[in-house]
Length: 58
Image 1: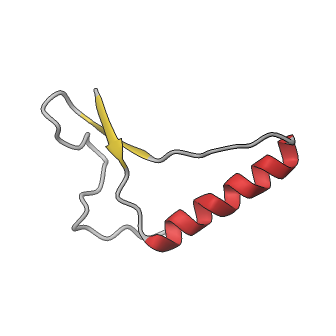
Image 2: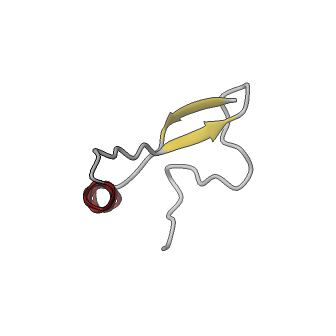
């Protein structure tokens, strides 16, 4: 499997940063969240992944 950074929109990145802050406060230790998309051996998105041109609804 291959991984590359997930194609996140600015609002999604902001939400991840909020979660990082909340978890860091709860644990008393720095927390960093990383969003990756899983690819097959040929570099294609795995089944169920959404391509960057498709829109994902929460």
